[in-house]
Image 1 (spheres, rainbow, N blue to C red):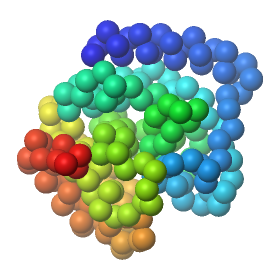
Image 2 (image 1 turned 30 degrees about the vertical axis):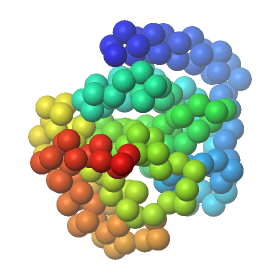
Image 3 (image 1 turned 60 degrees about the horizontal axis):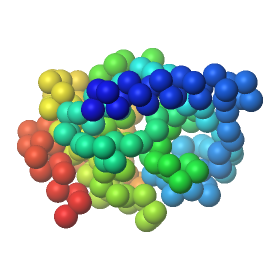
Image 4 (image 1 turned 60 degrees about the vertical axis):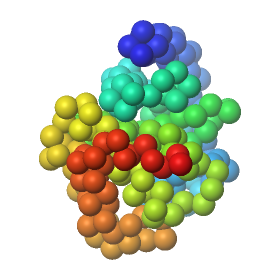
Length: 198
């Protein structure tokens, strides 16, 4: 997997230079099969660029932790200003995770990895293409907890992203207490986190 990661990072670096020249691409997430529509975006299109290599390595570390193989981790990490959010989606027929780098400033390395693992969980669990709902978010939270445990992170590290959760449930996300419980469940029993595909 590490060889694949290095190859992808090299590709991203070469693409980043050419994309940076034309300022990347503009994306309207309302028209894509996405999870986590960015809060407050209200249909606004955003510029998306290939992610810096550290985000690619975060994602591949999560892939390695969950023992994902080839195609299961053929996902392109991207960066965009998403008002402090991250999104699992498909761009140009390719699965991607779009990550707002301001999250790293708030949550540090562990929180960033937990968020990348959560979005990876959406791809692994095949959530895209159907309406968002709280149960899918809980599956992705469980997946993130498992990835963090398998990567040797503490439960406190796995819960680093919980400070972003809303206390109350919404039509797309469960309440904070339920999401924290899902992360803990994945961390305590990592094998069960892959059950979302059954």
